[in-house]
Image (cartoon, rainbow, N blue to C red; front, side, top):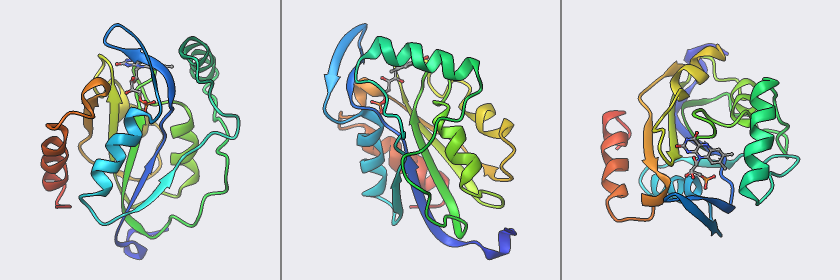
Amino acid sequence: MPPTDRDGRVLLAYFSRSGENYWNGGRRSLDTGNTEVLAGLIAARVECDVFRIEAADPYSDRYDDTVARNVREQGDDARPAIASDLPDLSGYGTVLLGSPIWNVQPPMIMATFAEAATLTGATVLPFVTYAVSGLGSTESFYRDLRTGARLGDGLAVRGEEVRDGGTGSDVDRWLSAAGLA
Ligand SMILES: Cc1cc2nc3c(=O)[nH]c(=O)nc-3n(C[C@H](O)[C@H](O)[C@H](O)COP(=O)(O)O)c2cc1C
């Protein structure tokens, strides 16, 4: 779809996993995943439609099992299936694309989404939560998928800090730099 068919609407699409996770060097079980919390802060600040990316085969709520599955999926360059059919996303001018960092990059299900979503001509702004890696290789991950999207600056928030008060101002700065707030 050519860029001219896109409009000013914003889509926020994110993947997040609750359950046992890394937390300040130990483990903690989270009822709501860190990226979901960050997605909520963003959605409260910019008018957008929200799509939650869920795996057809859900990820384990155990940390070690998820690490092992992710290593396999990265090694295989897998495209894990998404639980539901995607709605028509071809008209959004801007797509905010959120995920955790798994082994220094977004989970492979983000490649499934990015390839299926028809992003040609859209502006994609990645956002991630992480433990130590920051954005990691998020930007090259999305660039290498050759979706035809323009890639804007990413936002990275440490998962352990996403519920702290200061995160809102990081989100504000990111949205404002992107001309969205
Ligand atoms: C399978 C797996 C791999 C991870 N790999 C990394 C990593 O390489 N670097 C990093 O900083 N954090 C890593 N983490 C930590 C997560 O990125 C971090 O806890 C994030 O906030 C989780 O987001 P979520 O709760 O939305 O899933 C990993 C977590 C999991 C479950």
